[in-house]
Amino acid sequence: MKMTKTSLIALFIASLFTGIVPAQKNGPLDFRPVVEKRLAAKKLKLEDICAIDTNVVARRVFKDYGAMFIAASEVRFPTNCVFTNEEEVSAFQGTVKSRTATIGGRTIELQSAAMDALEKARAAAAKRKLSITPRGASAAKRSYADTHRIWKSRFDPALKHWTARGKIKPEDAERAAKLETTDQVAQVIEWEKNSIWFSTGFNRSIFSSVAAPGTSQHLSMLALDVAEFANKDVRAILNEHGWFQTIIDDTPHFTYLGLDEDELPKRGLVAAEKDGYTFWIPNFER
Ligand SMILES: [Zn+2]
Image (cartoon, rainbow, N blue to C red; front, side):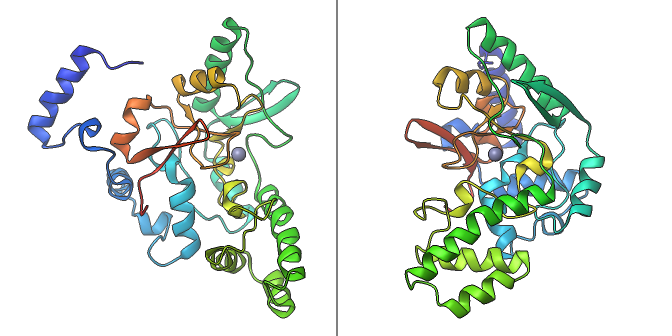
């Protein structure tokens, strides 16, 4: 949806009363205060949902995957940005209105609003002889166990790789392998500060392709990995229906925000352009 003249005038008039200047003129707003304000309206505190000042993993999750916290009001964001076990994940998922659909031979589950928008996007794509289908076997909703398994699929080989190259001492590797999940994630964050990368190709951050266990947007049923992500027209159609790429370098991954693109900077997201892709990421400590 494009801004109409009337809505621009309304925005200008609103800005006179509220003192809030339309974001397009002054760049994106800061992400953290936007989220805090939204949470306050629900009598929630950021530190209870995502302890970004005291927990290094929570901070990283907020920065890398936080976009969902500013989604449209019909979207349910997680009550905890780092779920620590399966019980916490199922308890949250059980409170969310969701729907399943079989698309391209795969059954996926998403929050209802996200599924509605996806179906509209698919219909719009079909009119242009394009398709939008899930990529891989766990393209939408995931369990805690899924996120743990996917994390290990990157963590284990990278640990072996860097140990073999003498960048990580064998005793440190052995200790890291036995750590509690959150401590293990914190250790990876430390190693990556020294360019000891844990992605599949050992050349990028592990967080560019997998989330730490218990932290994925897929747990919130707000994410879909799209097979046709490389098609610019498909991306544009998804964007028009509230689906955006919000994690740098995770190109197949789309997040349902349920908002017009114009609205994103006003909610503290900033557009990062990379290799022809636009990632809408939190404007937070960059
Ligand atoms: Zn994904």
